[in-house]
Structures are given as structure tokens and as C-alpha cells.
Amino acid sequence: MRHLYLFSGLAGVHGPPLAELRALYARPENARYFTAAADAVTSVLDHVGPDAYRRELPGGIPLTAWLRGDPPEPGALENSIVDGLFAHIYQLCLLQPAIGAPAVGGPDGDRPAPVAAIGHSLGLIGAMVAGMRLTNRRQYVAFCHGIIAMTALALIRCHQLTPRRTGAATPMAAVMGIPAEELRDLVAGSPVHLALANSGRSHVLAGDPADLADLRAGLGRRLAEPGAQWAYLRSTAPFHTPLLEPAVQAALEDRHFLTSPLTGDRLAVPVYVADAPVNLQHRGDLLPDVMAYGVCRPLDWPRTVHAAVQDCRPDQVVDFGPGPSARVFTRESLRGTDSGLRYRSIPAPTA
Image 1 (cartoon, rainbow, N blue to C red):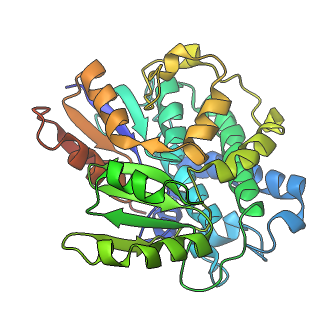
Image 2: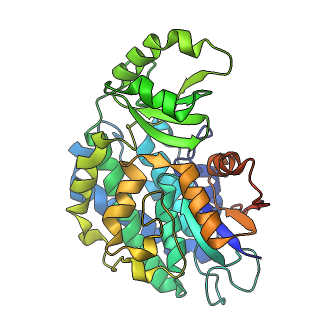
């Protein structure tokens, strides 16, 4: 059986996986990991200072308190800093080398070894970590400290560039039932960007909320046609647009948080993106690419999926979540092909 690991980015309509993280936190074997995760988040907040995050999260991110059962402040779980960070911490916890097993995908069979990995949006960071196939649990946790810190830093920098939302519009909107080329023509010349191509007829636009609202008003007749839909997303920043390129550059200026080298030759299995060379094993310094593809470059999910399936010929997709969105878009992207893929999810262990 050949397994393709799959990772979602933001958690989606159900919000961050707080309940799942609390269940993982309650397991004694995860204590070292969550201590490192909380320390990574605290170190970033101390580094950027309260002015960088207090508009979005006045109470900060008291990760350990939330995991122990304290309720997050109102609105915290609706913010993409928390959403993206929690999804990331959840995935990296599930990827820990099993105790007593030589590697992720050890002999217990619960996490079969991958032949490749792909990640939707911020899920690319989880895919990259999976592709490294780190085998020592202590070394893995030490590496996670740095990558969690870099992810938190990038998300905070993104929101420093994002205007405060007013009204019903958000910085990202899903548009269904309109082909990509038509949608690209419709936004040409506007300040709105085609951010995500999720499948043949499922896309996401991003930009300033006011610009999205204006575009929606202008597309009223087209959106009234059968099959066409528009839905604002929970996202609180315009991900996968050039608007966030300065945020990625600002985060990379503080790459000292990542103490381990991150280069393509450290990937034990292919990790795919849409742009050539599609396999990150063939690139050098991975951090700029991984941060850019996860945050500010447009995402072409069908091309990513087809590259992985054609190159590695997996039999089964192993979905690390959180949420079903990446799995749904993968199925849609492969509809009409003879891939014959089966799908399974890796759930969080119950307490």
C-alpha cells in the first residue's frame, strides 16, 4: 500500500480543533511536545511585543491555559492566527514518532509510512515536516519548537498588514460554480485576487473586504445564475495574495527561531507544490518557499494533487485534517480520473 499524506490549512467552518488538542494534551506522552509548543508561542509573542497582536488578540495566546480548559476570550477562535496555529500544532502532534517505533509510520500500522506529502495552504508546513521523516522523538520536538514559532510569527505579521474588518465582508470569499478562467477574467484589473483554485469550479477570492464587497455587488447578475454561489469565509487575512508578501519577508528576517537547517535534501519523501520544480526535494533553502506557498502565493490545488498522484502513484490518501476540506478538494480534483484512490483519516486519540 502506497500512502499519500494530506494536510489541511485553516480548520474551516468548524473552527480550530481545540477539543481535539485538549484530548491530545491530556495524554502524558505528549507533555514534552506541548511544553515546547507553548514555549514557542510565548517566545514569539515576547519577541514581537503586544502592539503586534493586541488588536487581534488582546489577551494574547495563553496556549497552556486554553488546553487545560480555560475558555478563550470572545472572538479568539474566529481569528486566523489561532485557527492556523491550532491546526498546525494539531498536525505536528499527530506526526510525532511513535514511542518505541523507529519513525512516523511505525509498526503499529496506525500511521503508515508515506511515499509523498501534500498540504493545502498552511497545511504545506505539516506536509514538509512529514516529509522529513524525523525518527528521534526529542529531536522532532526540538524541530517543532522552531517551526511552530515561525508559523506563529508569519500569522501575526500577516495580521499586522490587514485592515480591521467592518461590515459583513471578510478578506476571503469562496466562489462556486464559475470556471477559473472566467473568474480570472472577472477580477482582472480589480484589486481582488484569485487566491485559491481548489477544484475545477471551487475557488477563493481574496483582498480588502471592501473591495470584495464591491466585486460581489458588481457580479450580482452572474451570481444569480444557477449553480453560482458566493460565501464569505472565516479568514481574517487575505491569504494567498501579494498583499501578504511583506509579512512573509518580515517573518523571514527573524528566521533565527528555526535553529535546524531546512533544505530540500532533508526531505526523505517528495513534498509537492504546483510550481516547477514541483517536488520540494529539488529546491535548496525551503523556508522561504514553504512560508510563501503557505501564506502569500496563489494556490493551484488540482495541479498539486495531479503532480503527486502522477509521480508517486499512491493507493491511499491518509488525511491528517483538521477538518475535511483538503480531502474534499482532492476528491473533486481527481474526479473523472482512474486514480482509484482510497481515503482514510487519522483522528486525534481520545483522552
